[in-house]
Length: 253
Ligand SMILES: C[S@@+](CC[C@H](N)C(=O)[O-])C[C@H]1O[C@@H](n2cnc3c(N)ncnc32)[C@H](O)[C@@H]1O
Image 1 (cartoon, rainbow, N blue to C red):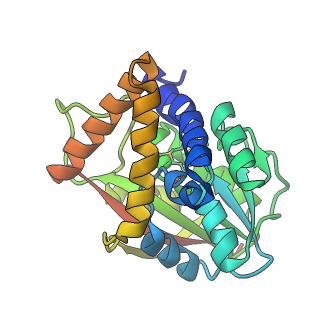
Image 2: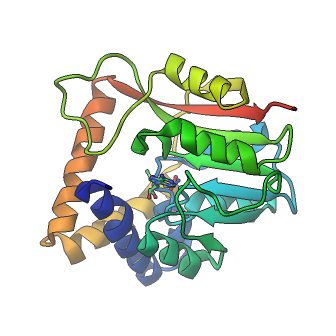
């Protein structure tokens, strides 16, 4: 069962975010809808590493409100397919960007085997207990040799006795490497994001967040999601968790 705080964060706040982005104007949509902490530099690294190009299908697993996929379509000409289990988030992505959204779980992807040119999965694996099941399904739907881009939040050490955001299970980097190898992926490269988000981007995202807070601060879902955010911020600030960008390839079989 999905933790209530995750429903608040990934469904309620996702829908409010899309509403606020629409109210503030379309320039706000992509920055506000990148909800896995990806910024333009991180997305560009993933797109270049995965050699995305015009017309290629990009399956975004756990696409949320669709910001990263919309960015990749705009900048690299890919044809995104979004897969997102939270219905409000999926509807928000379809509304904001007019992209095709499949409402489904990453552990059971309703696409044909070997039918997808590239996949992204950004900020998702730490929210899933059975990470191998998601990676196996992504592996199945990718064509042989196809790239997978991950934005992974990993544990830098033991997290026991710390306040971890509800429903999150952070792998360590060695565990992530083992998971990729065990599900048929070759880990090509992994880097820390540069962390220099342009102010023009973060300002637009912050305006949307401020409007969401102004409109929904009294609702229980807002408080639940805010507590998740505070726990993330603390773990990042104290170096207990960190973000890595990962490029892997489906092994040719
Ligand atoms: C931190 S958000 C990231 C959203 C998006 N990838 C982005 O970067 O903006 C994590 C997303 O993973 C989705 N998710 C959680 N469990 C999932 C699963 N089993 N299969 C697919 N997506 C899942 C959540 O609904 C949420 O939208």
